[in-house]
Length: 228
Image 1 (cartoon, rainbow, N blue to C red):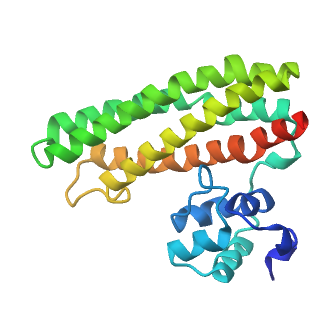
Image 2: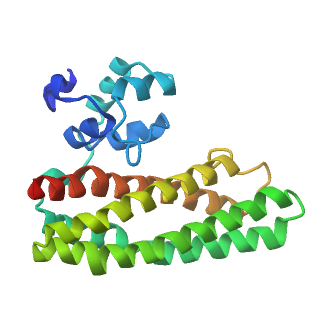
């Protein structure tokens, strides 16, 4: 079996091309540390080489994961994409950020003496994610998504430029949280809250990477195509 069962391989050039063709690729790319949201425009072969996996091996793993249920983002109109993004990501994200920040503060308070610099930096990183993402979601919904639904494509494109810059900033914060947690591996003897914090951050990274991919590489591209 080859990737051609999903789409002709000649149409897959970038990381984003692969995810659009085979949504099940998301988990495989995450396993190899390949950025498919902000880094979605990179050539797939280059991303594989940097991550130490061959392109053929990656594609075979994607094929094997092809039966994983996913949302068919490509089949949705821009307005439908906005509604599905809001339901899938926006509804739960503010609560999750509040929960993670509370845990980060608790771990720092109770265990800060064990690794003060790292745990304080992690708390600050989670706080920065919350400070970055909450107004970001408000901008998306109130201005950009509203413009897309109204068919005001030119207005939407202006806001999209800002959103893409903010996505880059969020991506950098997620990368920092991974570095500060040793790839989300809690230290030996970590308490339940500490372990739950790292697990929650790992899940936040996965969810946010998918969120940004859908917007950058599917929704925003559809809007740009409608304007051309």
